[in-house]
Every structure is written in structure tokens, then in C-alpha cells.
Length: 298
Image (cartoon, rainbow, N blue to C red; front, side):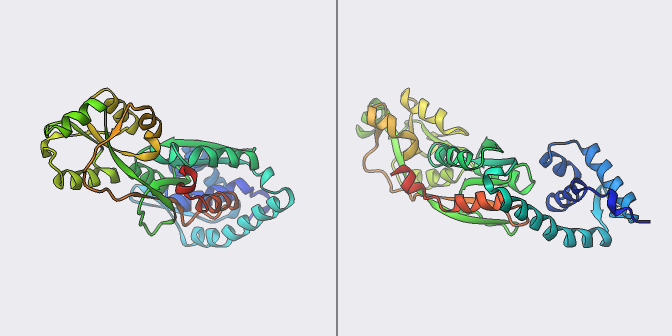
């Protein structure tokens, strides 16, 4: 017999996160618990409802038809409850943990002010920020390790919804000595680019082919700040996001290389999963979508 009075909200919340993220382990990470705890919750829910919600499909636990119906019926109910609770206290009373992924460029430009404003309005929401390359950010978002990402675009995936937040200019830079050597005709100088899965890498390869730089001079690094330090030390030429090098250029540690091929700016987008309907996350995404990197960097 069904024991509905013994079903708790955390049972249903856990079920919905399993459905959204696809695995018990991903749901456990999102809910800051363990996979055995998630499994125990689902066994309790099945016992108290008197029905089977999961069946094993190979090595994966998949929802039964009863499980899928419960998800479909409960998702809007829990969302409405969250909205009602927020309506009584506002977003200032919101709680939970939101995980935000960002690339180095966003982290050096729009992210600090955005996070500061968010904490002022939602002091009880814990933020966990992960800095990584775009390809890793998207993978973390798809697998549920993060809830939102600020990444170089364009981003196209049916499981994600995105909004553009502006463009960042790219510039050719080197130390004064390296720039002088290049101007004097040296073509075998080291050139530095972000790793191959960065959008800047493709721009770098295309630009080198259009320039007089020796093609075999290309070196890779997965950290823009380290690349800047290498260039400052006279280690070669690099293509850098302008917002990350304003101080170095203003102080003379790096100078722009003249007469180089033009570089298209890098587009930035904010992204989240289409399946995420939590009001707090939707509100944060809406605020992020109103950002304009050009205004922040202006």
C-alpha cells in the first residue's frame, strides 16, 4: 500500500536530478551527497510508493514508465513550490549552491563584478567557481558538474540554452626586444597560443599562415596568464585577449606587433542546461544574459 505521508521532498528532488543529469553519481555530486545515499533514497521512494521506478539497462539504471510519469508530474509541482517559497522571502532568502564555470577571459573581465553583485542580492546562495578551457566547461555543464558557464562561443548543443554577452578583441603582443627583432626581419621567433581546443588556437594558426612567421614556431599553453608571463620575459610573440593585457601594455612590458594579420574578436556566451528549471538558477542566468563584456571592459 502507498505510504505517501512518508515521501519527503528530498526523495522527489533526488529523483528529478537523476533524470536531469542521467546518473546516480552525477545527482549525488549535484546534491552534495554520496552515490550510496542517492541509491538508498530511491529504494525508500520505491518502497513507499509501492512501485518500481528504475530498471537496470546494461550498466545504467534507467527510469521505468512509472518513474518517467512521476518525474513529469512532480517537476512542475516542485518548481511551483520553489517559486512560492521565493515569493514569500524573495531571492534574498534563496539558498543552495550554484556552480559556475568560466574561461580565463571571462574570469578577468565580467565575472568579478557579476559575482559580487550576485552575492549582495543572494547572500545565502553558495557559489563555486571553476576556471577552465571552453571545451572542458561545456563538458562539465553537460554532465552536471557545473550549472552555468561563461565561455567563448559560439556554443551549439541541443541540451544547452545560450545567450551572447559580447566580444573580446585579440591583439598581437611581445616584449619590446622581441618586437624589435621581428620588425628587423626575424621570422623564426617563438609564437605562443592557447591549447588546440581553445577558440584562440584556430585564429592563431590561420593568422600565422597569413603572416611571415615561420609555421614551425608555434608553441602551446593551456593558461593565458602563463603565456603573458612568457611573452613579458622575451619568450616570443603571442595573441592575447586585450582585457587581460591592458596593464602590461600600459606599463610597456608588452607592445603591439605592427602590420600583422587582422584577428576576428572572440564571442562570449553564457550557457546552462535546458532541463534546469530551478527559479534561482533561472534568475542567475537571466542576469548573466544581460551582461555585455564590451561595457564591462570599456
